[in-house]
Length: 275
Image (cartoon, rainbow, N blue to C red; front, side):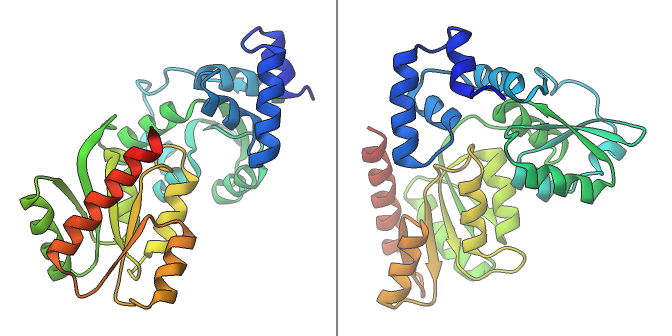
């Protein structure tokens, strides 16, 4: 199998010098080469998908969102699995199921797909954006918004607590989205792309830690900052939350002024980081 970097150099998408710099970054950050090259801004998602298809001898697919997908095909994959793994069913024939994927290295997901569906899986490479758009349209029944820059998503199973936060943020001028647990929060995060998420740590179906893991695993939501909301307010709990990847920590009982100030601080930190 050819190396991805060699394929991109031969196609004259990147230079040998760019590849050398990317390999250094890859070694330092322990990321896959394609991710590094995308972060450097030297290749597009489409170019990466084509190169991965060439590397693994997989077919690629483009512009499939407007195709017709029957419900019985969509029902082969649970929506939660499709969102978490960023996969989409394309066509089923006989004992085979063609599935759009972004990461051909992820053989575990391909094996899981086979176990879940009972079919032989034929991986087809597609871009993250196209798969996400298809999931949003056919599973979530809503269009993907490219930028909900004013939206704050509250993920909280306690209606009184959620109401206090919602009123405080609305008075401060923020658009507020609501979810009652981590699973619903993940669906909204994918379809709406909020600017920030405030999530309770302890919820049914998917807790705050599970939600953060799912968000970080999806390239389309991995950069959304998440503030943890919890009744456990010790310094050890706060340290655990920050080490896990939450950008901040809000203890209960909720104080409206504290919520607004923490949100403002988190957004300011995010802006500074992106500069």
